[in-house]
Image (cartoon, rainbow over all chains, first blue to last red; front, top):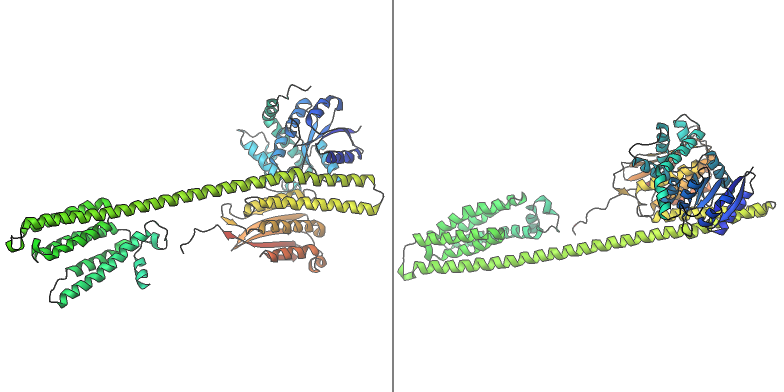
Length: 211
Length: 417
């Protein structure tokens, strides 16, 4: 069965472009396209998506970051993939805190789009130097780091600018292991920042209302 | 000129070349004054001498002043004044007492001495000099025998005391006025400096705002527009994948849009306040390399061997050109070398910041030497920007591209003209 995907993006051309690419694959199908979060949330029950491609800057009351928090609250198993022009902004970091499972650059080519989505399903979200630095900072504010020693090593190496292959060689593990460590780091980041992400959402009175 | 150099020699080191120091002019005037007193004292002693009087007292005064000049160099001029006064008051008293006491014409010497003493010390010490002068007048009054043909001693004493107070009072008033003006000047200067600082920080904020707006606009407008073009081109590719000629055009549209997107992004980044900071540039290059090499099975790492607190920066357009050069170099590694390990490095050597990219691949000799297009571009950019470009190719070991950019030390304090 094809994985069900919903796209939330206010630029129709980008939205339809992504939809066409995804629909051309054997593994995925687009079950809903929305220009803002409100509509997407209203139809969430009917769409039953496995993954949501979410723009950060959205018109209307709910931003992509709040939308991510709401969707993760509503359906924790649903993967949210942020679509963004820049990969290393504070907003991307905050949506990762809100529970996003990865991000996708808007002008990626067709193969990259498909690869990124399948990576996200496989639990291999990308992490760049700037994001890693923000993650390090976020964990430093906590009294006790929830990261394991290996996860901390991986995070440190990414923050130093090393590529996955380099990290894998240095730690005598496979590239896949590095990716899974990164996935765990993101999960712990989201757990640690859940309260805050939900606070943002509830302050906009969206947490209880729609469904 | 020689005179000026001689005067400046006795300034304390902190003031020597610091024309803007608030005490510079004051100190120099005092030192000049001592030279003038010295020359004057030689002259006046000579005049007396050639007219048959042996009065070396003026010469004592001049020589004594000259002797305390080294104390000025040590910033101990107060002790100099103290010593001069201690020696000269008794000498002047002796001179006057032995040339007619209170009736002596030489009593006039007390007036310029008092004026000199007041102008040389801080105003709050001036009363001490006035009291000593009046004390000398009193002692002269006390020990000068009455000589009726020249009038009453008491009259002369009171007369001198009054003129002495008036002279000192005038001098103090003038000096107070001067100090007030200096203080006012300083205040105005400070106000102007504060105004200027405020203006500069306002402008800087404005500029930072402008940059942010520009970056946000790019993100929202241009970035999204380019993404839309790329997405539509991809759509076109999906729809008509049968015609290879059209496919080629579509691929070019995508490639060009991607390139435009990337270079606009670098330009926007370059507008950033700190893009001439080598640490920040190195971070950007590292980040770029990491994302780039993560697409391939290549080990990439970065080595920053610059001390983090070195206050060096790059020339205005160096950063953007270094970005373009290293982008090309990173691409070349993938295109031509088949390397498995790539290292980006920054190191300071002399007055140059070296950025290098080392790989362990096998470059085809032909591609390196035969005017490879990318390579000549990199060299051209280097020449245009005063970079030193070098490429070392060691068969079996790898290739190293090294670009050295001039490092500029943090701006010095403005030197006096």
